[in-house]
Image 1 (spheres, rainbow, N blue to C red):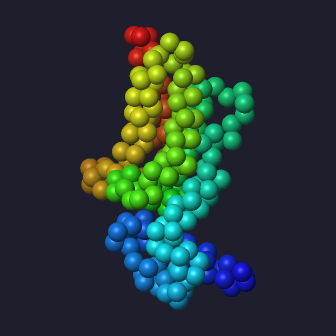
Image 2 (image 1 turned 30 degrees about the horizontal axis):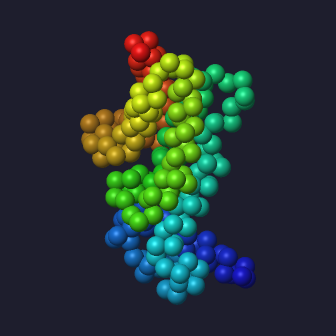
Image 3 (image 1 turned 90 degrees about the vertical axis):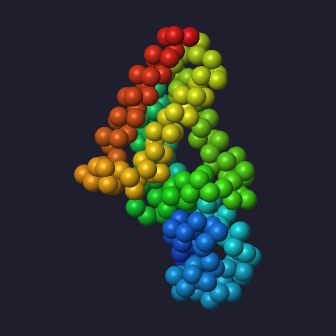
Length: 210
């Protein structure tokens, strides 16, 4: 593959990410993607075979870039407390959803994929979502202790994720209710701190009752 081919492939990937995130898989067209990328219509077939394979490639590249830029461990040392690890996990999740650039594009894509599932969802859950939820569950277990039943721990994990995704899915309403609320990289820290503190307090309360 020539340098020109590699550059074209990357432009198509980046353009596809923007179009899929904005319109969803069903409404996105290869024509619009290629136009945005400044590429010939044949570029998708040449580099990815079809629209579905292109979509999957966009999700895979976005996931890789997002985790590289915003790792779920936040770069913490092995001596970090479970509470610090939870904060790092929550903060990185927020950043992947709302920061600018390719990682945020992936966050928007995954949020849309969860709301409007396509044929690749099963594979992406296994490759992308399950490992992150497993990490979150391990952190929550360290906070709650060994006696909290597994079913309760999973419910707590879902609640943590739901608090974060709320800000993505409810963004149009929040912009009208609280226009001063900035869902940007700069405004994420107080949200991450709140979700962490709220979750830790709830988890410990639930664990004491078991």
